[in-house]
Image: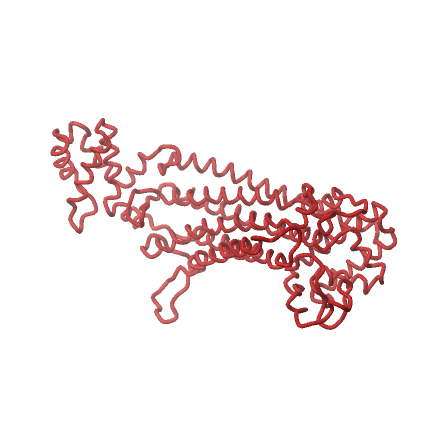
Length: 496
């Protein structure tokens, strides 16, 4: 990814930036980022247009020249990135293409700026677009998860800690746990977006410019919410890339947990993935493998590696510009591309899966998963919880290898031994037997955020409200960018 300061042209000829002295040598291709820069080709054209319109408005470049430059940029856009002349990066190549069409006056497009502030603006412009797409994808994924939760409110399933049977819960409660994590991931992306959406253009190399530039105007034409104030920081800073990549890596970690859960569930027959999200073995035809979820899990490494690579790249760089930065942006792009696909696949796998209710409820009884419910029942009757815990622990220890839970008589015998009174002195038989039933156990867990149907209904209501707000926020951001696009083209049309 190109990133700024003038450092060399193509391998054979002088360029508009380098001239003869720095035009040759074996390192020219090593220095070039033109191929990688296709991602910011459109962004650079937008930045060029905003900059030259502002230059004309500020009487820095005459109207006729600006019109010729803008017409040339239209030609460059129509020809596409593949038709750019050789150059060190997309910024130089576009400028060269403009000069080819306009003549030396085309070089006035670079007045009052450096490639340092130019590329910083391009990165922020394109990264903003990628963030909007990613957030829209996450919002869509959350809608899918909420749809599953609404359908599976009463579907009891086993819950685990340390991969051991722990307590009964429901599919809806499990799904909502990930939707809530994705709420936070969305909020982190919004926070990062706010700091990405600042205009560095007009900072030049790092020390500003003597020309009377209007940085607020280019911010308006590019749809940036504000101006990055200090010119040195504006040209050099890439911490917004760190913030975005960190948020993306955190999102990838959320998705990896979801994927791992589904892989484990599939191995136990607790979920049936749609064939579109599974594959079979090349040699074992009976296999149905959760390969897409395994790749979601695996792609988390792409994002976390990207964050580590970016931090390593930025570590120890002095102000203001260093060529290391040419390699910084790719870490964010790779992470975003990888994780955006992972969001779609993970949510799609959950949304299209089948949840076998009878199998899940039977599994919810395994390993005496209702033990805590019995202990809670005794505690609610006035038995100190640690004493109740002891009663139930002894009952669990007495289970045979084929037994999932003790019956009432076994618990009663141990209770009398520990408590000194029959179990019936504390709770009646019906209440104990209800506590031993997974569905009944879930129904009692109606505290805020719990798995009981009424508690889940409250969570769904809140989640839907938050989701609606996030949907409106991302739509507002996308609309603001589109308005800036239309405004910029309207201004360009006055010259061309």
